[in-house]
Length: 499
Image 1: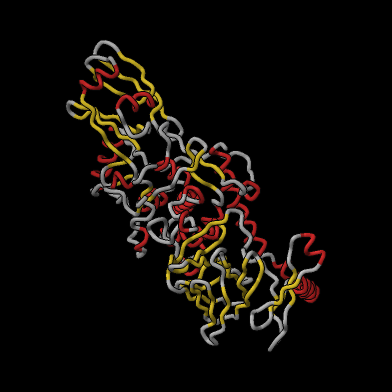
Image 2: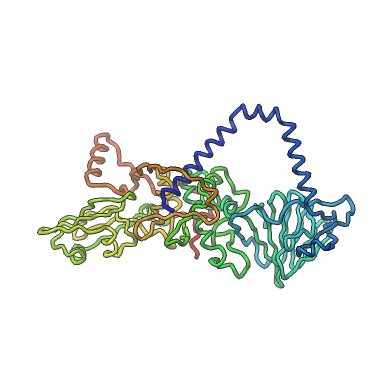
């Protein structure tokens, strides 16, 4: 999909957010709701009654009596009836898994002796998608190999070793490993312990990842970058791409993959960033590009993904075939400010060179040549770093660029461009229908970012004019650090690098 189409979809999402806000503030709608309050409440009660009547029932002790009938046998299904006891039956009117477009499995605990869990609303344990044991709200249960036990009463129910048991509640929130999580919990009983797997949709998973990896108070465009990078990393490591597939899940909730702290970490700003970029991933040759990232990459230059290489004049003359080079000039930039046409000027002749080809001749990490200057007996090439390897995106650098007005796609291009200097974005399969289309738009120009070692692209004329103006004002030259504010989030330091 063309890059501008992806960006258009994100901007359409932003417009929809604004429209929703206006609708909420519409007093006429509020008055209409008051008029039909009783009718709406009656319809809601009727729907809930129908749902409860359709759902299977469990006795208050959690056990079921199973019987089959001819119709069920013909369809290969089993019907359930309850032996009502005590305070009556518990109605199970929900499925073991929440609605999911892209199921994601997170290994919360692996091969431990027991796992304690709590549900806030009446829940159940499912085996083969069938409820077998009722869970009381706000009661603590213990999962151990082959068994679930209610700690207060000691009542237990056996769990199979050859199948996964799923613990869920109708609000799809569950407490385990001392945190609240969205989705459901799968229990894998093994001879040497039990494994707890959090199962939820990819986008719900990202709601707990983005604020765990980047402070939610940072710039909205930086948060969007984090959402796209984290989504790309996750998709690249799901299923067959997971290093944990032998354990029965896709990812772990720490820096071995990505920090994921569940519901407590969520914030409105990061949830919005996830929603506005929903389904958007980094691509490379029709494959998902794992969005590696770090809190810090190196110095100011590296945090902004800028590299410098000094090439001896003799080497440049040999490569280009131009003798006695007196000038190497960028004649034309592309939309990303990468040099596309370069003129090599010699004492007797000159030669035009394609910027991408010259970058390859010089062995630069990318084709993103930004500036060329003479430095003694060498020519200094300033270019973008590769960004798609183990170093990846600098989170502090992304926030700094966002503070200077860069849009999220421009920042991602700074760190994740391909060898030809282009950024390729795609949509996760299954999300296309949820991403609205929009007509093309023109991208705003990027602000020239100035930091302690100069701007990303700055001519000698710009530099001298700036110095002169500052001297006239009697001010010291400004210097903006290539980092965001210090984060209290320790998990953002090394995430997605130990791969």
